[in-house]
Structure formats: C-alpha cells, structure tokens
Image: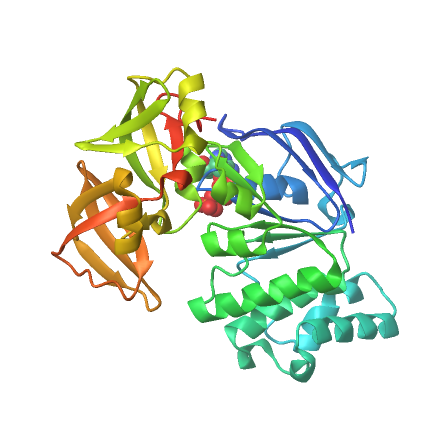
Length: 369
Ligand code: ATP
C-alpha cells in the first residue's frame, strides 16, 4: 500500500475559478482519509487530481515519494470507485470483476485467484455466476468494489460510493467498507457529505469549505475541539447550538450574558477569555445538543448555567428525544433521554454543561483558546 503527499495543491479551472487553494496533506500508509464539506467545496476536484482525471494547477502530488503530477491515470496504481458504478450488464459478477485484469493480459489462473479472493472478502462467493440485474443495490456496489480490489492498487479513491443506496444498505455497506479497509490494509481517500460515514469510517477527516482546508484531524478531535465556527457547525448532528454572549470579567469571576441569563464560566474555560481580553466583548457560545440537560438533578447541581424556555417541537427518535426551543431569540436543540416528561408547549428549564462549551471569536470565527 502507499503513502501520499499533497503539497500546496491548487486547482484553477480554465474559466478562472479557483476550486482548490493550497491543499496540504500527508497521508500515511493504511490511513482512511475522508474529505467532507458542503457541496462545491472542492472535495471531488481534489480527489480527481489525485486520480489524474483533472490537471493539477499548482503544487506537488507524490505517491510513495514519486512525483505524480504528470503521470497518466492508468500508471498511478490507483483504483477509483464512484457513486455510479456502471457494471457490464451482459457479464456475470465473475466477469465484471475479471474484466480489467483480462485487458491487462494477467494470466488466467492469477485472475481466478484474485477474483475469488475479492469475492470472499466481499461475501460475493455465491453470486459469481449472476448477472447484475439479478443483484440487489448493495450487492452491485460490492461488485464495483470487487473490481477495484482485484487490481490490488496502492490507493483506493472513493467518491460518494454509497450515495445511490437506500439508508439501510448504506449502513450495511459502511460496515463492509470498514472491514475491507481492515482486511486489505488499504490506503483510502473517501469523499462524502454524510456525517455518519465521515465520523465512523475515517481515521482522519479533512473538512473543506470554499476550496480551503479548514481542519484535518481524527473524528473525535474534530468533534471535541473544532478549530472554528464552521467546523463546529458542520461536524455533529443535530448541529451545535450557537448563542451570542457578552463576556463579563470581574477579578477571577467570568460570566457570559445571553439575553437575560447570566451563565458562570467554569475554571476550565476562564483563562482563554481573560488572556484574550474579551471583557465586554460579544463572543459566540457553542454547546452541543447532548450538553443541554433537562434532568432535575443536573439543573439543581448547576444553578449558574440555567435557561428557561418553552418547548416548540418535541421529536422522538426512539432512544432519545430532540427538544427545540428558543433562548434570547435563537433556536436551540437539546438531545435528551426519551424518558423526558417534556412535550411540545411545555415550559421548561435547561442547564448548559458549561465545562463542555465552545467559545468563538465573533469576528475571526476562530475558537478562543
Ligand atoms: P459536491 O459535494 O456537490 O460533489 P464538491 O465539494 O465535490 O461538491 P467539486 O465538484 O470539487 O465540489 O467542485 C468544486 C467547485 O469547482 C464547484 O464550485 C464547481 O462548480 C467548480 N467546478 C467543478 N468543475 C468545474 C469545471 N470543469 N469548470 C469550472 N468550475 C468547475
């Protein structure tokens, strides 16, 4: 397998549009890298530059230390799996998987070994004689994956490979892809706009916006320590709540005023505000829905972090409930246990878990550290 290096990668399309700006990333052997970001942020463009399907306008791409900028796609030792996994309808599963190798004049017995090995990994052993029309969507997707696996490439590039599948199949295939990554020890770059895919599959996630990398980190670190307001809002579902808050520093006491509520800032979050001279300034207070509590015990133990409101919407998701309500004119979400007695229209008290708040500079939108 392979390591990749993207240094100062740029993409300027012939019409002058700057789709990717100064993209830097070192990918280690066996990593599972995810590109996420809103539509049009440059994920596919970057992936296509790695594949060689799109010219690189600036910077250097190396695979295993070898500069690849001008190497033909077929000579990059890369396999790509797209969302539109056109299989040959007249060929069996076996032949679909063997086709690329036959073109390359790989000996028959070697082809047979590779196809059967891929079929075993993908649990397609019993379907090798079927034609694509006799397969489910997920099975077809696995055949498409099989075509890539038999080539034993250095790198797999996957562009939203699951986006054509229904929700249940997506979950199944997500698990399959995770297993494939484990069993092949493959280096994978995977483009998605699906939060769950990104969080569950990636060893590291690259969050992009407007052609610019915002943050590269493990799923856990992105979730717990986003570097700016955009990443904080993009990673996590339902998304983080954001409230404007005025900082009040008085000696060693620091509080945040949100509308009429005064919230005490705990020791763990104080220093950043004091150090940054935020007294009197408005900052953005971020809090994830699971850190907004409705339990009586939590509220009683945290009287300095309480807000009151009326439940506007009650959404039951089975094990948990999302409650939507307004605080100081801003809509908030609390993610609470389904045993909550609260329902739409109820007056409610919520306590914010202040040790878990995120603070952002309102102008730069960067996390205050
Ligand atoms: P999506 O999630 O919608 O697939 P993406 O993040 O993969 O989006 P890209 O397909 O990489 O986005 O496109 C990045 C930007 O480049 C978009 O604004 C797109 O309109 C623009 N773009 C793509 N191809 C071209 C082209 N051939 N010429 C000019 N601009 C292009």
